[in-house]
Length: 319
Length: 223
Image (cartoon, rainbow over all chains, first blue to last red; front, side, top):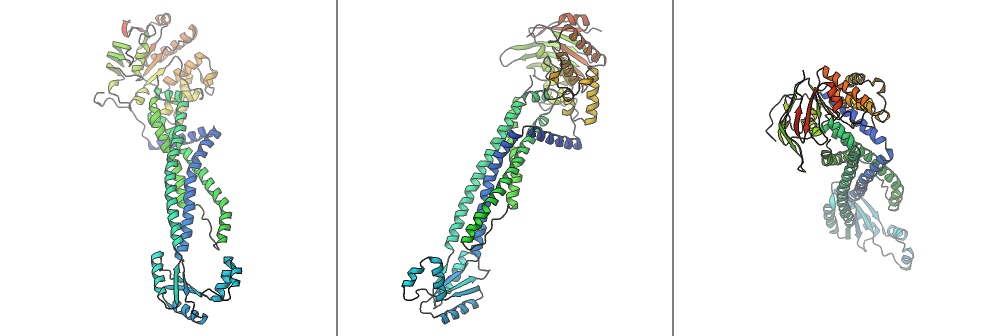
């Protein structure tokens, strides 16, 4: 086409107040259009909701496990198994010596009798123990590192120092499984991320397809609007709003799904934690997940609609 | 107001819709476009409304060279050209009022002004009491008048009509044409494609005849 020469210009409406008003009207009328076919709308929104709820729910679960292992990590205590020759009195002296260190926050002595008692109670081998004529268990000092000793390296280093004590046979840090748990949650977290990306793609496709059908259904309307001088932006707008509403509705459904799942899981988790002498509680929906769902849903809806509109609206030309 | 300079329109199929058309309509002029079907009447109107673009030559409407309008400008151009179709092109899920209001809504007009103008347009076509009715409940003639009201509601300087009376009986056709004559009296430039030659002859307006995509006859500007 020839170079554009400024001809007598067209008057374009650029009043921001009217513009805003028209956007508000358009968004409401899009919502009204969706509400006129509630079942279809709800089904589409539910699919979006599930697609959003799945990764965010899993993410929150992993987050919870991570918080739990972090709390264990922080309070990991060191079990100091004393030499078998050490008497209960001497054991108390060892405890006092360990407690005096400034890198130890707290100690507790489990003497031979208490150790046997605990073993009987928790191990299930109580009767086997009865067969032995003497107590095979050494006294144990449980030492909790000071708060500034953080991380498995520092705690391990402290354990090594303590093991240098003559009376101490073995200083054991039970951190390895906490680390394993950390590695597992890390892996799951990554898997959740991949899942989230895939499901975000699915949401785009769902919204895109829904809007494409909508464009087909309103083919003649789009034609007439083009005939009477509707700009592309004007024609695009209701579809974009529709995508936005689908996303927002999906987000609301996702939130409900996540909250209901949390409530359903709360009882079993509490029972499970009780078995491990833990008072762990599932955290409620955190701000990150909330914003992820409420922001991500509409954004994905809008993007999906944009893709569909960009692809299909240009094909509708009046004849 | 409307000028064609050696305009040709060739479709991708190879069919030549128009070839070498020269035409000039003064502002406020009214003309009929006649010829057999396939003679190029619709193509000529489509070029004016930018539903199609000319493959050769230049089309001028309202002081603008349409070849030089970008696709972004097309909607604004169409707001200055009211179009009326044989099949009315009404939206059947909207009331008569909303159908007529569409060009105003599209251009961003405020609600009060829209109501005022739509009522004025309804009054002009004699459908003032039918504003809340859906098009399906109207007769063919009434539907066509809704289409006319929609075309003129934004007061475009140019009005095009493609076989506006094609489906109407002679009595209704005459009424529609009289309506057009009234618009013309207030200064609107009108170009009406029709094959109803008997009716056109009686109205005494300029008649442009197309044959095989060329202007085969032009009665000239009649006073």
